[in-house]
Length: 85
Image 1 (tube, rainbow, N blue to C red):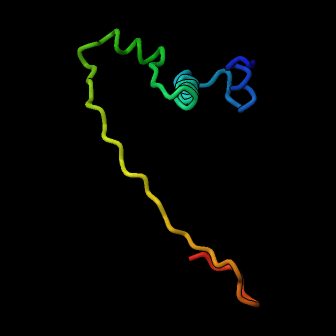
Image 2 (spheres, one colour):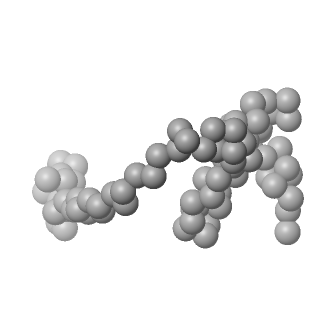
């Protein structure tokens, strides 16, 4: 198993780059793989420094999944490209 620093090197992250960008990327990886939200060290420090400014928001309602009815012609007309409507 690779270390997170090796993965970030492979993806071209600058070792001297912004810690916030690195934290955001790791947070995204955790959310996409485990489906949970986590706090970054910077976020934890901000909350610890001023807990009175943290707002707890109500859980957002899930939106409706969009769907499209793309129909492709199965037999293209001679001399024309397949048309997608």
